[in-house]
Amino acid sequence: MTRRCSVLPNDPSLFVAANGARARYHQDQMEKRKFGKTDMLVSVLGFGGAEIGFEGAPQADVDALLNAALDSGLNVIDTAECYADSEFKIGQAVSGRRSDFYLFTKCGHSSGFDLPDWDPKMLTLSIERSLERLQTDCVDLVQLHSCSEQLLRQGDVIDVLLRAKEAGKTRYVGYSGDHLDALYAVESGAFDSLQTSVNIADQECLALTLPKAEESGMGVIAKRPVANVAWRSGNQPPTNGYYQTYWERLQKLQYPFLTEADAVATALRFTLSQSAVNVAIVGTKNPSRWAENSAFAQLGRLSDSALQSILKRWAEVSDADWYGQQ
Image (tube, rainbow, N blue to C red; front, side, top):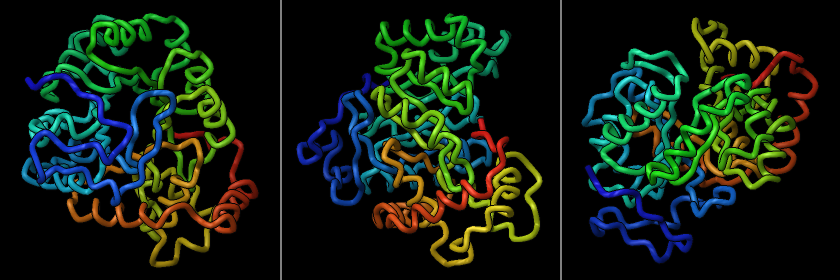
């Protein structure tokens, strides 16, 4: 197991990775934002580890993808204990580069343990297993993974994270989720960060949770920042999960820009244009897609007119039950 995470400097010009020139910090290639009140200065794009686990990405592809991303200035990797073998693959891919990036994971599900979801003992065991899989003795952030408001109010699941922080197994604690559960998590004051759905087809958070999270100094992670690119299904609806919900919403929203060649860039830039968002997590198992997303992010925020056009269309068309997706 590698040594615990070291703190990346807030002045990127001071950073030189431990393993030399290959991983030298390219500060000019990726915008960095302060992660709430923490000491982290995060790249606007982070890597999301769900796809490499659920879709069985070969280890060699994960190695190439993550190392290229780190070399280009990405410094956030986010995963979860329930993303199949994602944690293990990430640990293998970047085991020699722990000081080059911030490492986030999530807990809550009992896969592999003979205990129920959200059981405090299971959560403690899960965090320990995550550290082993990720080949580190400390992560930068452990998050509760879509925990209900009811469970949050009981307090014991939060206590597990706080004890892990006191023991030096995580530097910060966070909540990942949406809608009223996320609102309670933000208002509780117990967490350093919020991870929530923010995209052109998922805007409930823009009024419900992000203003309060920003005001209280929470770091904000945007998940599904390009709405799973659901519009590419054309008139054929996807058949499962988030894709289908986003596809159905986009059929009603009918944003004009979705027919343009730079639609993905516009969608990503919309998410990154939200002042509360510090980092957007993009998942992929395709090494070339990382370079594309990085180029889109470098285009910067959308113009005010483009941003307001998307916000206006959402206000006109969205239904009252278009809640943030867990």
